[in-house]
Image 1 (cartoon, rainbow, N blue to C red):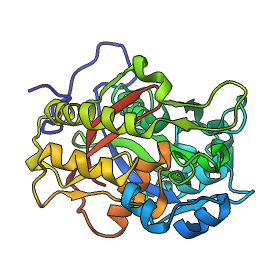
Image 2: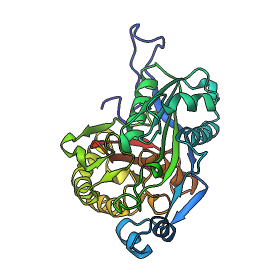
Image 3: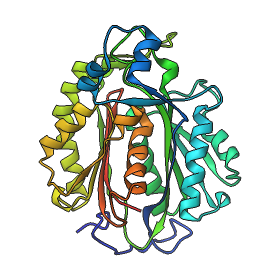
Image 4: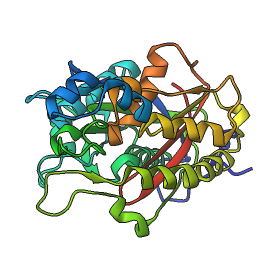
Length: 337
């Protein structure tokens, strides 16, 4: 079986391609989260935007009860730094040991500079490179794959991967496809060397033919989404992706402890769970109920909540799947820290 699978521990000798004499394994060794203080209920959303729907209507179509909305000072970088600091503290790794900070975000307010360099400065990661990734809601899974390859390849020892979003900045209150769905927050994972592989091979792709389903047009500050079409696309295309990610890692759905899909909509999460025929022991993340759709932040936030709540055990396997604008998608199996 290939050394890239989670079930192996073999090493590969290198011939001068790296300062290290072996190819290490990598794993998530710390998690962190930042949830804005302000929680907005469905009733408050209805009142805020002057909508003609009810709390029950929103719950029945999205599963959302509340979402967090960032205040003025809670920028993408501020929230990302908060989550990153907690991931470092959990792993007991100094910020100065971090080689690269990756921030996955689609809602950074300015084009240049990106958020990652600011985050590195805020957490005093003085030796770190910095990179923003815009893979929309799949961004964290993309960044996690980059981090895994960098550590395994010997380029880095520790990589911080943060999904951070202020989606509330891009909402049109009159558009019920988006105004009732999205929230703000950040989740982070510290990837570092490990005795055994803890991050399975990524399975990813894109579908540019569906690029118009989720957009923010040039010169616009409003997110637009065809919710019904996204639902059909996700429930058709993501189950095969999820199974391919399990196969790439050398595991089956019966080996999983948790399923952590992008928290797009609870109806989508439930549909994916049914399609995968997950055994009853597999815990399914439902962070969307209290956080709304937080785009690139949703997967790390949902995973961190499961760990913090004691719903999953260290060493168990979690299937992560992200999908969103582009359309982009990615998934991998990870060992729970």
